[in-house]
Length: 131
Image (cartoon, rainbow, N blue to C red; front, side):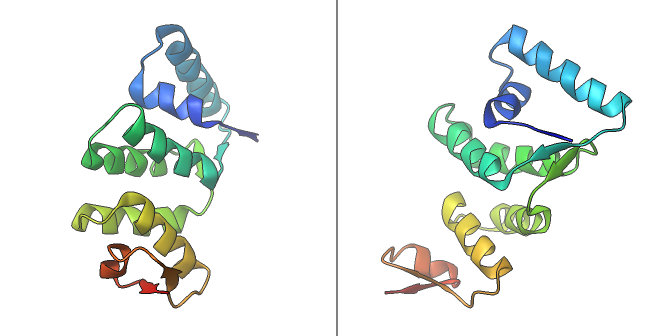
C-alpha cells in the first residue's frame, strides 16, 4: 500500500494543475485496476480541509461533500474513517467551525467526555468545556 499526500487530493478535487491532475487520475485508475488501496493519513484530511478553506476559499458545504466523496472511494483507505463519517454528518447539520468539529469528534472517538478550551464559541457545540 502507498500513502497519498495532501497535494494529491487537492489536485484530484480542485484540478488546478492539468499535468498534476492527470497524473493523479492515472494513479487512482492504476490503484483501481490493480485492486490496491491508497492510504490517506488523518493529518492529510486535516490539512486538506485547511487548504480548501484558506487557499481555495471553497464553500463549507462543498468541502464537506468532497470529504464525504473521498470516504466513499473504494481505492482510499482513510485513517479514522468512522470519525470522519461522523464529522461529515455533523458538519452537514450545523454551522460550527469545521476544525472545531473535527477536534471534538477526534476526542470523542478516543473516549474523551469533552475538550477543554478557551474558545467560548466552540463551547456551543456541547463537546467542549470552557477552561
